[in-house]
Length: 515
Image (tube, rainbow, N blue to C red; front, side, top):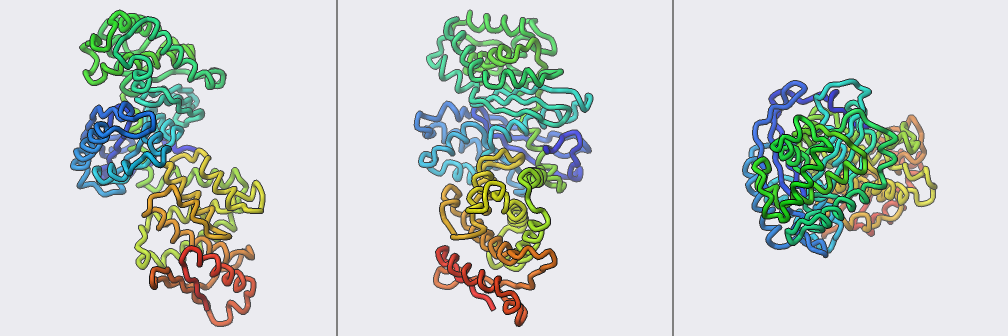
């Protein structure tokens, strides 16, 4: 299930929140206040950073591109300095996804970017980006619950194509097409010829070929285009009197001819087009034409709303305890046949242990509680494949599933916790997490392991009377469990499991003691 924008329960009207979109072409920031079921925008900032253009063949950022990005984020950070962390959500999209995938090439850019902004940055998947775009575009549109909407968002490095019914996204795809990437591929030297444009348009069509039949079969009642490329093309058409409130195929073809006649990027000087949009306009227009061809579109509405608005609505939902991530976890538990009652008992015990170690382990109460609860809910999903090494199956599922509302880092942490909840304590699930997050996951994994162990009997009436104290000694973490007198003697399997667990945890430099 996805959180539906029209049914969003927002936070109190006094809540001011901010969304930061680190796109492949531009960085955007929006500060807004919830106003009933809608938003009151307080401030907007946009800078054409062109991050995608600064990514080399090895997926390294050039010094010039990194300098531009960090300077922009410092300016954004000053504006956001008075907002609590939980009221700011910053996300990276296609270019940061590509940068992150090249593990050895990141060079700590995301960490430096977070320091400049003063807030954490989530790298979101293409499907999550598509979900947020759809929510941002259709929120408050009205119309029938059954109305089918096709939403297309052409960014700098990717294009999101979504079909939804009313406020709910049904089909979501993110394709590696964008105005910056396409511009660099076909018009890098600035020359625009008919042959080049034809190649660029056909290449976009080919990239979209895999979704053509499925999307056409599903169908839609209206098509809506979002973000700078679509809005820029529409403004040029309207300036030429080739469009009114919608982009038409006829107007699009005339605009294509207009751009080809210019012959060079330097001659794209349309007054209706923002100056910083002109260097990538030909590439974006070719992508838009490819979308029209692939989906046989005749007309398209345009929207000023997109990812940033979707981020804000999603953030307001989280602040109002309507977190789409909770819905995603519940849906996954149902899909994989999780024993919900047992998972609930494990979660209750894990959270009881967590409340006793918050201060000593310096854990963030809200984020640790959510993450541990989600992991406890899903710790047995791997059983759907096999009991043997089911924690590894669960990790794989969570790393590769499309979990709505989750950033890629969220998913990696959740997957690591599920992997580490039993058997030998392996460091491999933590390898691609930042050091600070790895340390948090190690601590939470210990609590989840203990909770799962204590409920191994699956006794529905068991409420383990356990207390925990933690500390450290010579670099080794100490975990001391206490039970009422004779309780362990009455539960010999639990005592044996704890003895084995003490051996397992030695490899993680943890000394487990119990009495």
